[in-house]
Length: 463
Image (cartoon, rainbow, N blue to C red; front, side, top):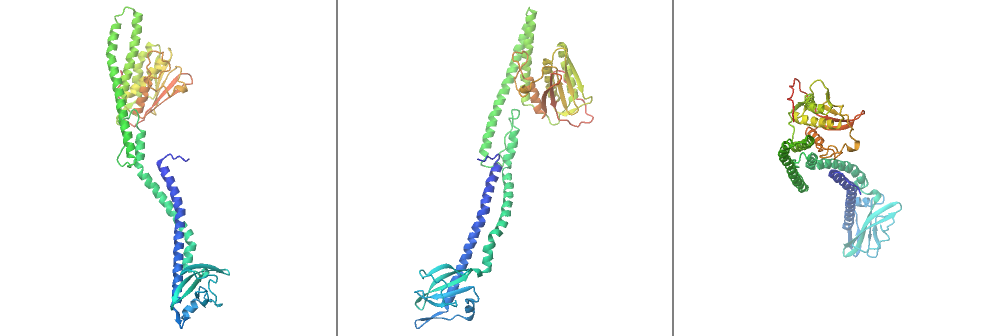
């Protein structure tokens, strides 16, 4: 069974079948109607000829007499060859005949009905005629009138013989034009559906406030669109509740963590105190990331906002440097020497690069460097010397709370999902690949803008 991928293809395919059937059936039907009309005209002509013969039949002393004017005698003569007639009595005896032999037009016919239409062959000629009963002076006679079809009326013969090919050549272009017009009509009629489909493609977790338009929507599809909009409204409420819960929970956890951190300082055992501080720092970072995720859910980039990618990357390097030095690692900044202006929010771009740098710092070994490179094409790359990212994990690492090693402390699996959300808000892309020398490369691509003589955006020295 054929499956159609679109409504338009389904309608057009069915319409093509209907047009094909129409293209075949309509000429045949018209041909039949025309043939019927031509036959009816021929029958009418035969009746009129029989009436004409009957007008010149008279009864005298019980005998019938036929006095045809010279013009009619010429019309019915064998020399003319177009029409012929014969007059028979009730026993089938020929009283008058236009044939030289004096025979009946249809010799084998016996009068049985007031009007009959007959066909016979005379040599190679096809004779078609009628046998019509008439009462002349109280005597019933049958007038046989016939026409040699080889001498059929020229106009009728041409129309009937040439009708089908002529109509075929006219019908096919007309039906093709009709199909083209129908395609335009269908596309126009389904335009609201196509527009709603384009809008539906933009709906996602970050854009749950979008609704499908109902203006101009076909009545048959309107209930479906309304049901989808209602489902989107319920989905939006669910996402809002989830975001509010995450934000509320993170806010509520900050105070207990601060109190716990203060009480830890009173512990006498330095080793235990330091271990607990590291645990609280990891928990505090997780809380901050949860708040950041909740904030970014509703974040929209101002269309007129710009950022100097090189300057933002330098701020990230300065921010990360103390942490790198404390871990026996280094941070390096390279690439463009001039400002690289992109369309975006400087603060969130800073967060994205910072999260990548912190992630790289946590995976690169001591004594190695995390590199930040800014290209003039609006791409910033963060490189590390860690184990890299296996191909099978590259589609999972941007999921929330996904971790390769869940036993490893201090990592909630939120950093890369935050980066991805920021790139989505900027209509950018993020890619990951492994370095030939070992380690991973994360590339963030932003949209470049022309900004001559622009002033450097403000730095972000802290989160």
